[in-house]
Length: 178
Image (cartoon, rainbow, N blue to C red; front, side):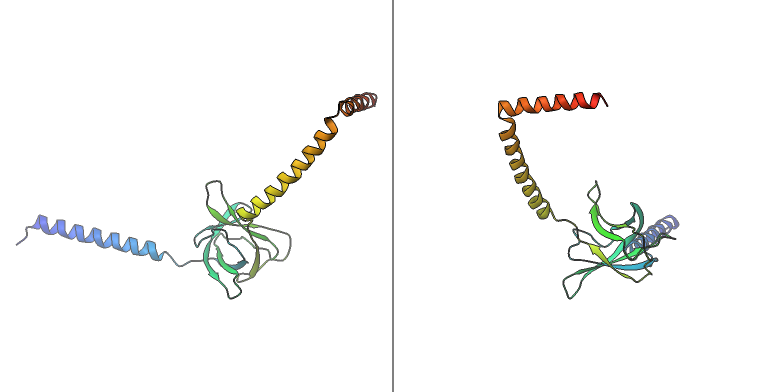
């Protein structure tokens, strides 16, 4: 036989548990996603995930809804534009980028042209991989070493340095009279 205080306490605990469960269930299911759905296709999505932010010109306009690998090994990125009055153009540049905080986002840079209706299939621009950056950086360093060696050959000669100084002085003299 429980007293009234115990019953009220038990009822309160049960009510709180039901509310917490309902809120957690609602949070997992979320609300139905509303917005205009588009599809972009990539060979590499560089860490993009469902729920990633979609931006147009740097402004958040929606989210990535899902990612699916297609038969031809491309990745279909389904994204929703939830912000009203945002139009996606057919020839917009769609890229996967990272923010300074390390978040991966789908960035859309508008280009002049026809508006893509909802449901359009758009071509994405694959992100540059770290490997590609390292290869390009290595090429640039080798080219820079060649240029530096050539400059050292030219400027290493005392006569060439003297001639270069004279040329610069002559150029200064000519430009000062203009």
